[in-house]
Amino acid sequence: MKSVKAFVSFIASGVGLAGCHHQEAAKQASPHYVVGQAWQGSETWFYPAERFGLTETGLAVVQTAPKGGVTADGELWSPQAMTGAHQTLQLPSIVSVRNLANGRIVKIRLNDRGPVSSGRMLAVTPRVAALLGMGDAPTPVEIIEDETLSRQIAESNPDAPKLDIAAAPREAIVAQSLNDGSTHTLGMKADDTQTSARTLLLPEMPQTVMQGVAQAQFYRIELGSFAGHAAAARVAAQCEAEITQQDGGAGTLPWLVSLGPFTTVAEADRALAQARQCGGTGAHIVAK
Image (cartoon, rainbow, N blue to C red; front, side):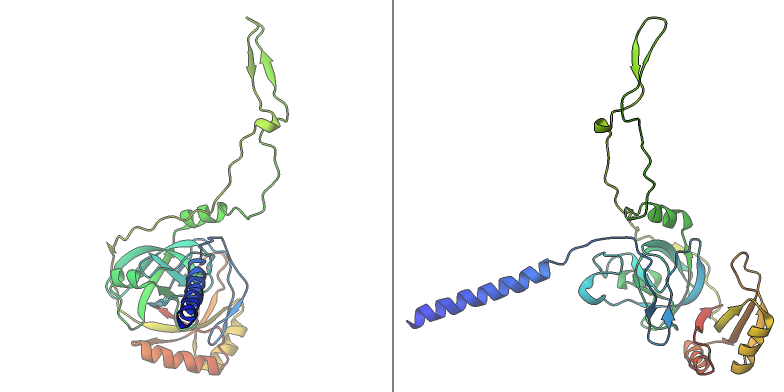
């Protein structure tokens, strides 16, 4: 009797293990294009939006595995992948990342949301961090979006609204030559029309390192850009910051309020905390 009970217990435990194994194996990739809703970070809210041709600087950190092992755009996360996380850019999108401390440049696919702190701009996988020569400390970087590839990804989105335009006549149109009476079909019948399922474009990112130019590491705290000088002056007075006029082209507000420069990340972090206390809820660190 004891042997029978032991056997039943063994079978039951085996079923339990099989169930656990099945749950782990059920995790599947489902890549999709996403902009997403506003989300709350550790100190502020972030508002994702489609942008093409983005260039910005800030601090990068090493990414940890997302919850469930799946990225915000439905890919399976891998520490060896040439991918990263951004707070607001549409996913997936392609950017080049330059380590401002040593000039190394790699190209990655952004496929996740993060970092959660406004004091950090970018999170990259351990593999990307190694190629860039990053350590455990936050690293000053510049990212430049590949506008062409990022637009191609957006246009490949199979879930985007499409105009319902017939690609060919419903009935075949036959043209007959007046010379020899020969015929030539110009159209296709509806039931002959070939359709192909569209899939999201996911460019492979080669593990290639280019050498760019390193630059001196200084940091500023940007509290915000304003359309009017009066609004900028109010914020500057509250936070004892300075106002500069910027000419960033279309879509850029002319009056920038900022603090700095600072020579270390620790100094920049302290200034960022002070900026939040004086009302700079959208304050963030940039590398100059």
